[in-house]
Image (cartoon, rainbow, N blue to C red):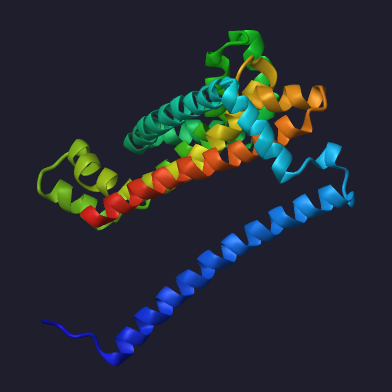
Length: 265
């Protein structure tokens, strides 16, 4: 049985202590912020009508839980985000593979992908409404448009940076491009794909919210734009808090997927 040396134990203890300090510090910063926000709103340092307060937001959320309206808004945004994210992941991998398989195609499409990736996606939302109407499809496409072009470029770059010696070995053993793709390129690029997914899940959520601002009757984006129009700041800030929690949850799921993959290799 291997025994841990004094130095190793000291290092492990220091790492645990570091993680504990980081965790406690994060919680302390959050609680301090909430306390200062609540205190300044209650004593009148800030206008509670404009800035609301944590207690008002909590009461607003509880009221919408009781009448069950908040669940429709959360589910709508979550559904549209997940669908757009899955489509972005699938389409970007397929197109990146196509670009890797055909150097001529990659040279033709590269400038178009760069331009489309640089285009402000909020400018596309009104056009999408004209083309597709004010439907869930429009919102899902808006969510996809924010992430897909950058995702294709990043994945294609990852594919081209795979070790050339491994690909040459496949060809030396009389393999073809399909073998090189499935045995070397894709397996080597899984970390890059997962890393891309971490970025895309947040971008898809941003795109969905942009779409809901303009073409929705449900969803947290709709709730934000509606509450700002009727000056219900409690609703607006509650929606923003829920979006933060949703983004953290979705990111945590991708992070969990990455940890599962790392344990298997």
